[in-house]
Length: 223
Image (cartoon, rainbow, N blue to C red; front, side):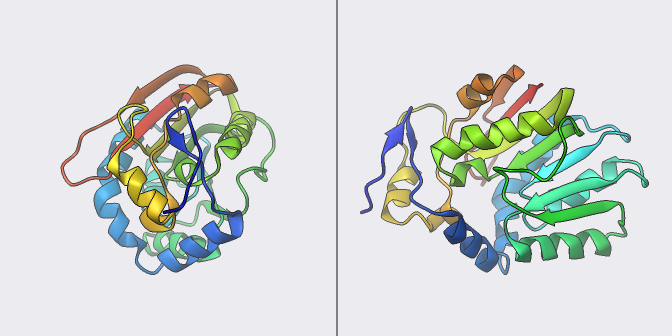
C-alpha cells in the first residue's frame, strides 16, 4: 500500500502532471462510462451556475465534452464558449461532440490550469469538474488563484469534485492508497476552505445524494 500524507482530512497526491495526462489520454477511450455516475451532479451544478445567453463561459477540464455541449446550448449562437484540458485526446472528443451537435461557437485549448492562457477578468462563469480532486494540495491553491484571476468581478465559480461528507476517512481513500490510478487518479477532497482562502465570496457547498452516483460536492462562489 502506498503511503500518502494527509492535510485537513484530504490525501496528498503522488501523481505528476505527465502521469495524469497519460491516465486521461488512455481514459478517453472509455471515460463515457463515468458520465453514468457523474451526470446528475453535472446537471445540478449547471442549475446552480444559472448561465445566461450572453455570459462568457470557460470550462476547465472539459473531459469528453458532455457538459461543454450543454453549456453551448445555454448561450447565444454567436457567443464563444471556451474550454481547456490537459489531455489532447479528451479535447479531440469534446471537439467532435460539439461539432456533431451542430456547434461552431467554441474555442478549445490544450494547457496547464496552473497558468491559464486567458487575460484577467475575462469570464462571467468558470465551470470546473472532477479535476481538483486529482492534483496535489499545493496546486489547488495555485489553480484557484488562476480561476479568480480570469473571472470578472462578480463572476461565478462552479466546482464539482469527488468528495465526502467531512474530514473523516472513507473507504475510497483506502482504495486510492492501494493504487492512485484507481478512480482515474482522483481521491475525495474538500474544497470549500480553499475557495474561501483564495478570496471568493458567497461560498456555498452542496453534497447531493443521487442513486448510483459518485460521492461528490458542488461548491459555488462569486469573485
